[in-house]
Length: 196
Image (cartoon, rainbow, N blue to C red; front, side, top):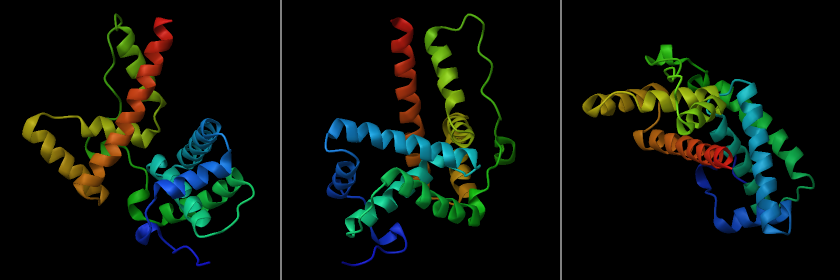
């Protein structure tokens, strides 16, 4: 049995490794999926409350590290508690990185809040506003800034965001896509509740 590498750079999440992790949560795949979501949401909240930049990514990194431990043969009795322990280390590492200091959109050159919606807003606009406000601050600021400007200005703006964050443009696109997917799921759920 070999130890997991210190960082995730030499390791990538495989379907088998994720399946093994889920089976440790529950033998029933549906229950395991729900338990996974509960763990991930709690981790995101922990990182968000502590002011860590991009809490979703830190939560994913935490889970990846736990999955990697399992893949390398370690036995974990209480996965949710173990995840919280690993989260402390991920948080410490995040705070050591200069680019993980939370910044406002004013510092990034953007706007700090979404524009106010008219009083006669429709259900979709209400759900969008609600779901946008439910996002962690850093995610909300990033997606608002990412989609501002038009045509050439948009391209330059996105490159500037990536440069400020010290990440490649592809990594920025991936971050924004994850935020957008979450936002779309929230809006869809909100609209379903509104129509019933």
